[in-house]
Length: 337
Image 1 (cartoon, rainbow, N blue to C red):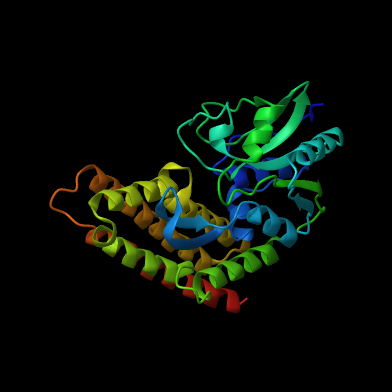
Image 2 (cartoon, rainbow, N blue to C red; image 1 turned 180 degrees about the vertical axis):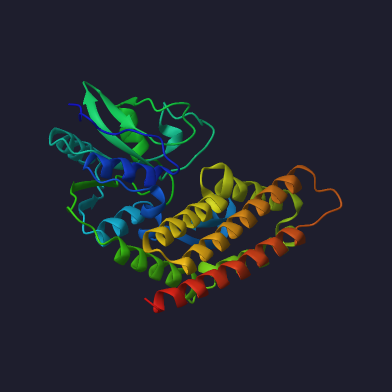
């Protein structure tokens, strides 16, 4: 029970890389940048309470599976996303898809995947694709860039079931996504405009102060009071956790911003639009600024004698100003279309 000719290739990000390979299996080629942008993957939310690991948590993208859903809807792809409360039924549904020669994207906890190279990390929303089964082992296409090469992996059925149903909060337990068919022609221009329009809404319009550009300003305020609120040790714990989320866990903060810059650049080239090309350059400057924040935060974590976090808060505030300008300009660009 192996799907022949599945185009397993490593990617930039687990979800967009998996989607790209699945689309290529159905003879449609596009970039991870376009999937991410049309699927409105760009986001920012800062939770000012100990949501994960006892620390405040900034998130830089939307929920697992949302990029797949939005891209598929906008490109009129026939798709399905399912969740199963019962682990056994979820495994039966997976086997049914494989029998029908359909690759199945699933979500799993990386710490429970024996083949994953980072055994000390915990992330319950990692996307991978199951493309076959041999006796009691599933064949896995995992695109994560931490792997040294583009080899396929195998995992025992019980291990896969445990990884799909980790005992952690907010895990999308049993989630499975797959494509039934891809249309012969897709309206890329419409998808680009719809993707940008929704991203502008998420970044500018949500009234809750934790979300979008407001959330980045809010994050800056929180960083400024960390040491007073938590004490030095716990403030550093928050910083370490946020660094792991934003840079070390994968694409994170600057990485998602670089992906969006790539999307704007490809879109500008596709549409022959100089204004959008200029915005892609500005987006890359924002990504550079997030990378600067991560670098300075890492330096501060290692050596913070006689210093406080105000300079980090200042960097975050300047990022908020830059993102506010970018999405205000992008909104004007969308309105002109």
